[in-house]
Length: 230
Length: 230
DNA sequence: AATATTCAAGTTGTATACAATCCTTAATCA
DNA sequence: TGATTAAGGATTGTATACAACTTGAATATT
Image (cartoon, rainbow over all chains, first blue to last red; front, side, top):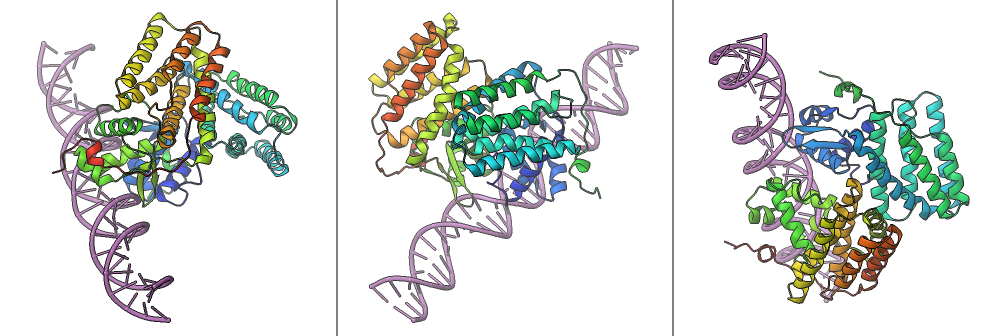
């Protein structure tokens, strides 16, 4: 979640790139992540890949089974409500902390993010739109001034986004831009209670739009990560 | 936090043992954890130790600085309120979920835990008392039926316990047994709101009893982990 | 034909060698 | 004397070799 942390290290590069393609739904839940392939693609040793995968697994976006390997995390339908409830609790607490206390800079940033997200979705760039949609929620976490809460919030945001990737086939990625606009409004004006309530409804709306049908998963690591196979 | 996960693996053994001695305040915050010493003590390779330390660092009880090494996590006084607030939010939500829904078995287990904890403290076995005190909170997290919330709760419990280890010199470890007894009562009877309120007060009480003076740190890994130096 | 078994290929788990980095101490210089 | 630099030791970072394990296919068996 702390994107800034290991940005320069080799591990950080692998981590960030994988995090991005997973979040942008280029790698679907269930996709296999073999160490050798990734080491080959990123031109680093397996050691580095292993650390990156381990970190991703601690953040819940990758699932490592001993002696089997790593896949993009999948979620059983019956477990879905747990993750959304956890996210509501954390993100509700986060938005309550910032409501009514936005600086003008933060307000402008949030509005700009909503516009940018909207632009991407309208122009058909779904991957970028998804990314920005998540960044919107990440930003709220960042300005709430509570490190552990922000960290947990981002973890739950990423985790539920993965669930949306698995169970929401509509292109929206779950978040409606209108909703985000309304969230900004209530963060500017509102008392904390009202902001928290709106966030709850927003997240409930995403959860309600999930479709629990079966879909098959297939991906080509080399193609997704845009590397020439030699 | 998931003690059961890697119990059999070498990494799991190192992880659990270190987690225990840290939680039981045998290793104070700031204590250095060098890979070679630990590899020597546990008779495993550095690879295994590294993974265990990495896992501990993701759970916040160990702090790894690049090219420097790992220490038991220390907390700046100004950051302390953040962690306690995060813990109140999570553990408040957890206890609200279980209040009024305890099975008789769970009720008996909780009462037994309070008694055992009390016994240890009265007999002067502070380390075990601390361990049981934390296990009491862990158990509440476990029976709340929400995996991610439980995981985050345990993380915050461990993290704040570390803070207590650093800033509370009284032997109690922060938790008063009376408080735990009252928590059981309200979990049995109470509506969720009341249980949450009592948990808030309990945690606030622990936070209020911290003492932010300086103390020096010195430890001998070999002695603490009870290994003959050959 | 259906089930068991064996073997081979591929992948992860672990140990270790070597490189890079940091910290301490001692020597040098102003 | 004080600050600066240099060298040495110790520790972490990375790559790689080998061991252990899993899986799936081909063969053997009932």
